[in-house]
Image: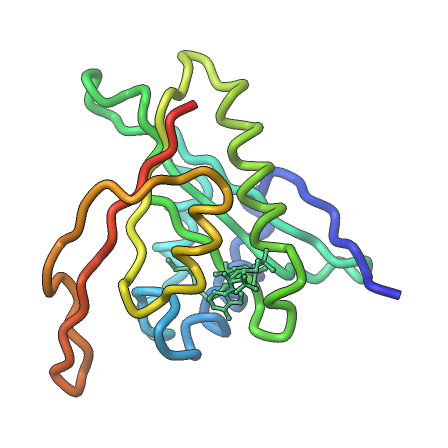
Length: 168
Ligand SMILES: CC(C)(COP(=O)(O)OP(=O)(O)OC[C@H]1O[C@@H](n2cnc3c(N)ncnc32)[C@H](O)[C@@H]1OP(=O)(O)O)[C@@H](O)C(=O)NCCC(=O)NCCS
């Protein structure tokens, strides 16, 4: 039988486990922008606890973290209705089971409750990650633009970023 994780808001106590999760996801190519050594405790602590930060974790029955999504309200008043800096990771052993979709649905539901209101969620996805782009389109995100050669891999390969937005 397929095990279903529990989704809840992350807390400071989740930092170490979220670091390990993102490092495991980052070890696979063409996924997260950060390399494993760039997934630092400071990065995760900021993602989970900075002002305006929202982080949701998917927790397995044994208490281990299978997935995490985070974003942050923009701090400049003109953009304060925007949730940005979005990053999502599901553990490589748990991908393709609906956890990423559930995390997004929970984040979107949470964003709808935020006060002052969040009216827009935005993200960027590497053009070399078409599975992720398809997933975001299924969730209602629209492609809004393209940043040409925004990413550069160690072998010199350049990759465009696809900018996507969801209006609430
Ligand atoms: C992208 C990711 C968050 C999706 O979560 P998930 O739980 O695997 O996704 P779901 O099971 O809810 O949805 C499945 C869809 O996600 C996408 N997907 C599935 N596995 C994926 C993988 N390993 N990498 C990228 N996208 C994947 C596909 O579009 C898939 O739909 P399809 O079957 O029609 O191709 C997850 O695979 C992951 O953490 N990948 C590595 C990190 C990453 O790419 N982060 C996003 C950077 S923009």
